Length: 145
Image (cartoon, rainbow, N blue to C red; front, side, top):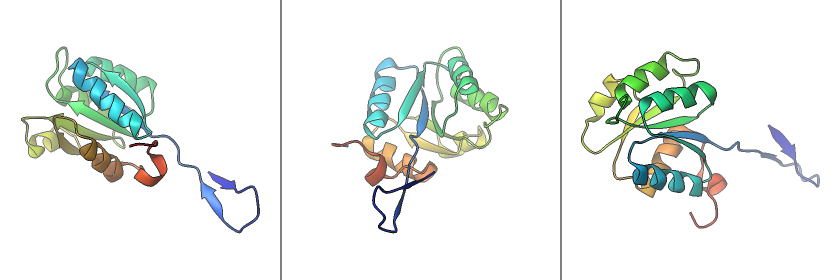
């Protein structure tokens, strides 16, 4: 979407839409840490505590990126990723495996696009956002990020 500036200086500004993120994490503290970091970076964030909840949220919403824990109760991240990949928009949405003890090759084999190590760190979040979305720190981050 293009917006004309209030005065004619021959320049137009591009409106950056907010990036929608789904965080799938069963650890309540970890989920809140991820949510707060991503919101601080200007993202809209939904959180699911397990794979079943993640699938339901994914069906209802539209996400630019999913951060998926692999070990959760009810349904793990590998199975949830397989289900999401079969849904509309599931193939084009990037899914990043979040784990402290799985290899990148295991996550890729499960259908994820990449892996981000735990614990959640702000610099890693920034890296993944810039790598997998149109996020730009200078345009999207809130003051103080």
